[in-house]
Length: 164
Image (cartoon, rainbow, N blue to C red; front, side, top):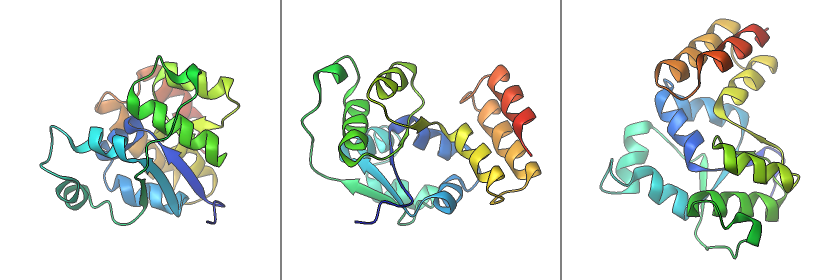
């Protein structure tokens, strides 16, 4: 597999993508492969849709997500996390890929394991710096995250000030 523009993703960032207009198309501009543990997919659509296909259609997911079917044996350090986070961090660790994760406990453990990580807000900043989206588009996307409770005002202000 070519991991050059690949990343692993937990549930939280995918929920954030739901809150951004064309969120999945946006993240697909940055990565050609987004590895997602099957349990994360189940957490994502459960309670919203009858099945994964309905979710994919509703949010125009396309083919950017690569579902990892096998459940991985996880490191003991991950035991305090929920199943989706455990599997996402373990997958990123095994593949030595960066991780999209937004939950604080999971980020701390990812950091302890030496993983690079970010949330969707950080990816908006990255896309702006790589000239994939304009400053106006970046601020609009950050505003959507703020208005939907995915980031706080302080983070919004910091990132909005960092936009080119």
